[in-house]
Amino acid sequence: MRTSVAIIGAGPAGLLLSHLLHRQGIDSTVLELRSRAYAERRQRAGILEQATVDVLRASGAGARMDREGLPHHGIELRFDRRAHRIDFPSLAGGRSVMVYAQTEVVKDLIALRRAAGGTLLFEAEALSVDGIGTDAPRVRYRHDGAEHTLHCDYVIACDGFHGIGRRSLPPDALTVSAREYPFAWLGILAEVPPSCDELVYAHHERGFALHSMRSRHVSRLYLQVDPHDRPADWPDERIWDELETRFATDDGWRLRRGPVTEKSITPMRSFVAEPMRYGRLFLAGDAAHIVPPTGAKGLNLAVADVTLLARALAHRYAHGDPSLLDAYSEAALRRVWRAEHFSYTLTTLLHPAPDESAFDRRLRLSHLRYLVSSQAAAASLAENYVGLPVV
Ligand SMILES: Cc1cc2nc3c(=O)[nH]c(=O)nc-3n(C[C@H](O)[C@H](O)[C@H](O)COP(=O)(O)OP(=O)(O)OC[C@H]3O[C@@H](n4cnc5c(N)ncnc54)[C@H](O)[C@@H]3O)c2cc1C
Image 1 (spheres, rainbow, N blue to C red):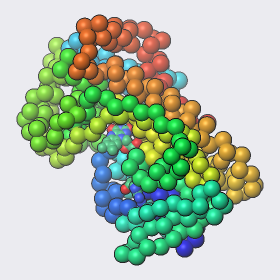
Image 2: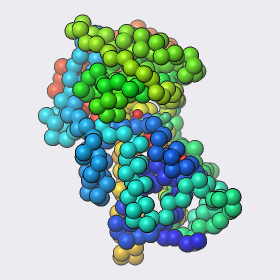
Image 3: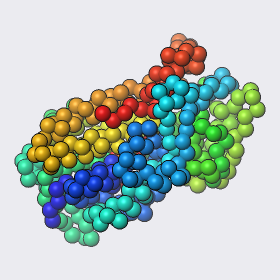
């Protein structure tokens, strides 16, 4: 089999890249390890930056997002039993975010690729990537019980943190920077209307809590927990009691409880592998970088990476000029490192570490108070949260 661009992984990065290339008349083949049903119900991110919304709209993938997504113009920081609103449009030049679940972005993109007759193979596991140092790379994969080879011009690894793309590079070709955090997030989905209109980021001495939502009827809530905890350690009542404690305010705010439909624990890590290219193999999305979810950047970085890549590949195919492909890694990494810094800062600001000192606690409170009393500090938070334009 032959294609122009072989894409490994049908997460948001791989699907959007395939869609954007199709709009430029460039054919691609997407190989996805999991089934379509699994890919469409995997619960993950839900906050789309302004630039992500713009890219989806401009590419014709934003119609359902515009009908069903929830535009959000601010977040709430909660600490010391008080709520403080950060208003995005006034602080970040009119920019905002959209609440629209990653599952829905994935469903919309799969439907678009299918409607356009795109080659999207589910339950197709990429086994190896070879020839990336030559102009004839190829991907060996297993599908329907048989092994096949996909010949192509370029391979784009959009196969997430555990994929094979990054591992196909010579070990000394990559520099890896990483940090593990001494806490994890317990996340639940609950069949109950959100108890707030905007996301609430709560700092409490017992730990961080986040109230988010997936729709007007479904709440998404997170608790900072020990990284060794298992979901079974957290029966539903214990979760709701702990959420209530961490969100408590003096103004009578009430948390609505409802049936928990999903529960999982996610480790928190920061990770960057650079450069994001070796020969004919390019890395995009979680395959190259991970951020702790506090800043809601993971999905948005994946979208920014493939937006750059689609433009660079279109330029290469239209004009025979690889200069944008050559510039891809550096351009993508500028944004990645900004998001890494923001996500790290927000994470360490809001999560008490198990071994922290009284000095650390006082610094945190001072930083939180500064954020909600200084327009300049709040503007910096807002600007980073709504995200930078894709340049
Ligand atoms: C549990 C969890 C919760 C998260 N919550 C948030 C959040 O609240 N906010 C936020 O901003 N971000 C969150 N993220 C991060 C965000 O979801 C990711 O950044 C985003 O999914 C990245 O998209 P991607 O396309 O790069 O990778 P992925 O979505 O991981 O897609 C990679 C795809 O590659 C496939 N694949 C892997 N190996 C192979 C192979 N060998 N052959 C073929 N296919 C393969 C996988 O099955 C997968 O479908 C979360 C991530 C996780 C894991």
